[in-house]
Length: 325
Image (tube, rainbow, N blue to C red; front, side):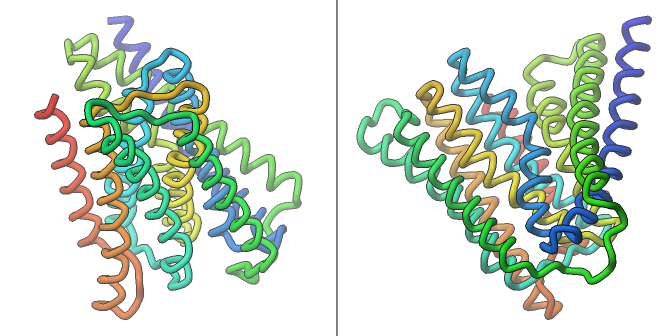
């Protein structure tokens, strides 16, 4: 009984940290963007996206050092699918997410390209070897080169300026940075406590570790992105919400997988290859969905109906993974 109480306390405390952390993060990041005279999209694609992807980076590097390549690739693909279908799905159900045309034609293709490069690297190995697929150190350096290209593109975007709002920053430069990084720490720590508490409760009630990994842990590592995106959308900072997700997907593939395979070349199963193809398909679906919304409503974005479709697709994906074993 005491264990359940402690686990429940961990879940509650974790959610409090998530909510407050997201609140400070969005306010700090918005103020920071105005201070630096860049758009909130740039901040979302870099500072917020990289920060909220810290759990995936930590899990993947530890798994790579232990030689658990299946965990590394599964963590990245599962997180990317959850980021798009689950997080954007829930956010779109809460509030409509408009997406600027230049974002659709610049950042979205970069995201799809990252997924396509990963699939091509794996497919090349599959065709060459047949029996096994390896993500080699050379492949890792190629992915890291893609990450450097993305950072250079972000640097050029920041130099062009284009702050999306003309209001005065709410806070000074130092408080803005402190709130941004303090909020990120709150999100990461809150997500950790929430996952640990939820996993503990599940174990007490006899839920299998496999199901815990596919649900609580998979969703748990995406909790920072989820709460940050919802909070940003509710505060009408939709550029921050979209940038957070798109940037996280790019960061996961180029940096997390790149670093992991440089540390330790990874032998990938055929299931891992298929998961990478599915993740790429989900990115393409997001790209198409935003365009279809623009055709119907004359403004590109995501609405409640798209959000419901994304959530149903995510449920179908989870069922597929469970049935596949």
